[in-house]
Length: 84
Image (cartoon, rainbow, N blue to C red; front, side, top):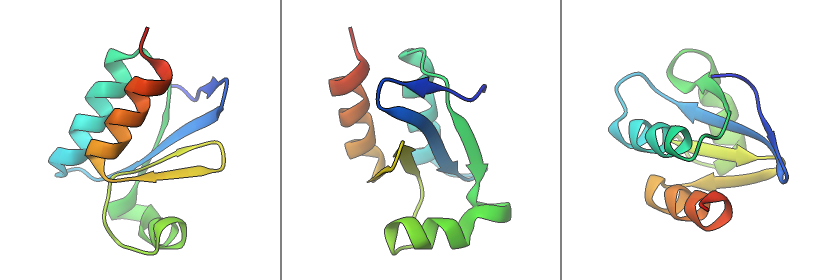
């Protein structure tokens, strides 16, 4: 999806091909019609994931400089911030 800047900054999703939790977050971003950039953590972003969160787990979502982890928490935050 296209790069996006929201009122709170650019959204980037660190994701993986076979990650069902990542798919849930992607679905929510699309449902809310939010543009976002993806980084394939399996291929080239795992070191960045560890630097951002201190763990290897994905998904990780960044909004500007803010780092969100755990798909349930990420979806809750997206709904709270962007749902109409």
